[in-house]
Length: 123
Image 1 (tube, rainbow, N blue to C red):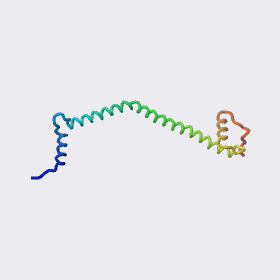
Image 2 (image 1 turned 60 degrees about the vertical axis):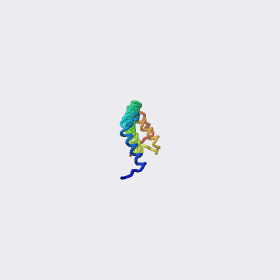
Image 3 (image 1 turned 120 degrees about the vertical axis):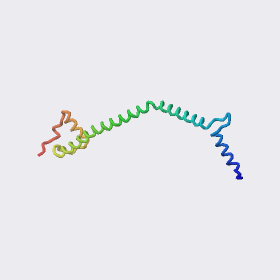
Image 4 (image 1 turned 45 degrees about the vertical axis):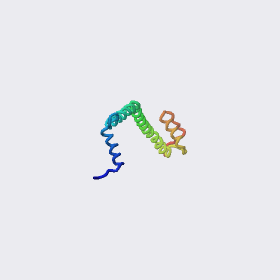
């Protein structure tokens, strides 16, 4: 006859208590069901708390996209101003000016207030 050690018998007794509980003890399936219900309730509460967070994330994403489009559009215009100004300053302007002064002169020229005294005809 094979003798089973006491610690193995204790482990088997504990496993049997999970599968076949005595009266007054909770069943393993009951405990798992309670855990599933608890986790589900916690998830529902968390989803209710973050109900409006999804809309805020979508709005923030749209705002970032609009900001990128804004800077792309007006960044191209500013770069064109600087590029045209540098090309024109080599041919038309009598003196070398900074990028800021060139931008101001081009801006004024596009708005109908050119300073003709600063320019000469290329020749």
